[in-house]
Length: 158
Image 1 (cartoon, helix red, strand yellow):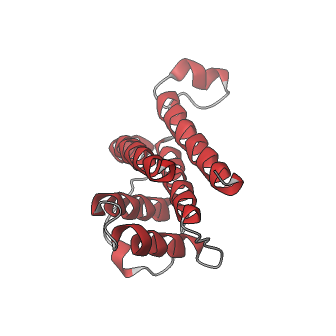
Image 2 (cartoon, one colour):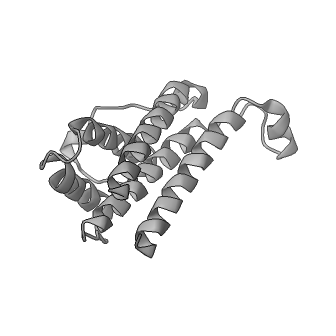
């Protein structure tokens, strides 16, 4: 396996582990106190963004296997478009993975501003200023990122 592919997969797995850890930490007040955080704090928004980056780095790794490297500017948009073109439009991967990827990028954009002026993303998700309200999107993000990573790792192994 190419070292760059390996690096992106390691980054994806690290982002995913971090997302799960932050999700779990959100419910454990004693540890938050030990870390000098407010016991009422939750980290669900961070879970969502780390899950997105797990998917993003996994997508970049899968594209590198096919000889495609996306770069700035608009690296997030380009990566999504190339992933669709190379894997979904050709039938190599199920459209469900593209739906997961799109959902993840929309959620991350709501939090991080990754995309600018993308018409397809508008109105899909609204995040609440009360962090606890993001628990369900965070849970779903973990499930979706896990599914995406498992499927892409299989593609890369082939």
